[in-house]
Length: 458
Ligand code: FCB
Image (tube, rainbow, N blue to C red; front, side, top):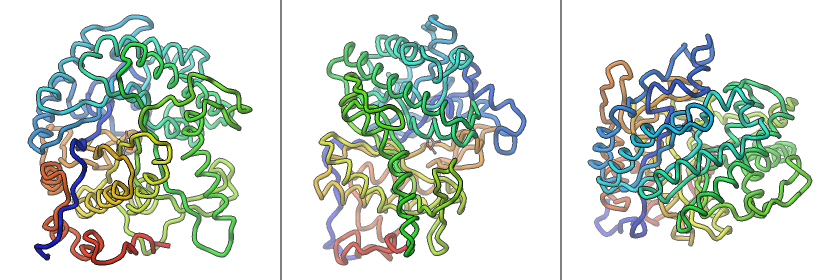
C-alpha cells in the first residue's frame, strides 16, 4: 500500500524456472515400467493413463516459448533412460538427438537447463532384471549416465543424478502404491542402498567427464512436527520419520557412511561429499501423531482442522499450506556450506484460488532465508503445464497453465502472469503482495514481526 515499501529483491543471477519430468510430459513413453503399470486395472486413479502427456516429445518447444514469455531463465527437466537405452547396452542416438534439440531450444531462449538423470522411471529390461533390487543396478545406471553426459555435455553442465529417491522407495516398496507395488522392508533397504551407490557412481562419472559440472540430487523435505499435545510420543514419532525420510539419505551422502538400518556405518569413499548443491523439493509440512502401524513408522498424518489446504484436501501428500517449513529447511541445510536450489514447490489448485498467495508466501520465506545468510540460488515451480501426476493420473492440477490432455489446449491461470512478473522483476513487489496477500503485507515488508498465522496451525 505504501509507496515507501521496498521491493524484496533476489540476488543477481537468481534462477527462476519451472520443473518437469520426462514421463509426466513427453508422451508415449512405452518402454518404461510406469507405462506398463498404467495398463493394470485400478493402478491409476479413475483408470487414467499418461498417453500423449503434454506432447513434449513432438513439441516441447511451444511450452519453451511460454517459459520465455514469462521471463524464466531456467528449467528443470529429466531424461528418459528407457528412450536412451531401450535395450541393454543399445544407445538410441535418435533419442539423444531429440534431447539435444530440446536442450538447445531452451538455451536459445536464454533458459538454463538443469537435467535429472533419473525421475522415478526405469527401462523395462532393467525392471525385468530386478530393477533397483538388482545387484548390477548401480553400474548399469552409471553406464547410461556416461552415455547421456557424453552426448549432451556440451549443452548442459547442471545435473541431478536422481529425483526424490526416498519417495521412490517409500511408494514402491513400503506403501506399495507405485511399481513394483511391494511391501517388503528388506527389499526397500536393498533398493535404498543401491540408489545411494548408483547416485555416487553417477556423481563420479559426471565429474570425470565434466570436471566443472555442478551435480546434485533432489530430496523431498517435509518439515515433520509432532502434533501439539502434552504427549511426547507424537514428537518422538515425528523425529523417527524425520530421520528416515528427511535425513538419512542426506547424511550418507555427506560423510559416505551407510548408517543403520542401511548398514553398520561402513564407509564408501565415492559417497562422501557426493553433491555440489542440494535440491530441495518442498510441498508441505507433515504433522505427525502416534499410530500403532509399523508400516507407517508408527506415525500417522494429523490434519489440523483450522489449517488451509490445497485441492488434495486433508488426506493428500501435498495438502497443508505451511511456507514456514521451507524457511526452516533452508536455514538448516545452509550449515552444509553448499548452494541450495528449490527444485520443486507447488500445489494442486485447479481454480488457482490459493496458488498466487502460495507463491508469494513461499518466495517470501526463501527471501527471508537469503537475508539470514542462506545461499539459495534458484527456484523451480512445479510445474509449467498440468501433467500426468503418477498414480493420481490427471486428477491433480499443479500447472501455471491448465491443460486439456485430449485436445492439448493450454490456458494460463492467473498465477502464470504473477510468476512471470516476479521473474521479470527478480523481486516480490508491494503491488503483488497488495493484490494477492494484503492481510499479510505488514509481515512481508517488515512492519510486523514474523509471528505468522502459519505458525499457529496446531
Ligand atoms: C514430486 C515429484 C514430481 C511431482 C510432484 C507433484 O514428488 O518429484 O514428479 O509428481 O511431486
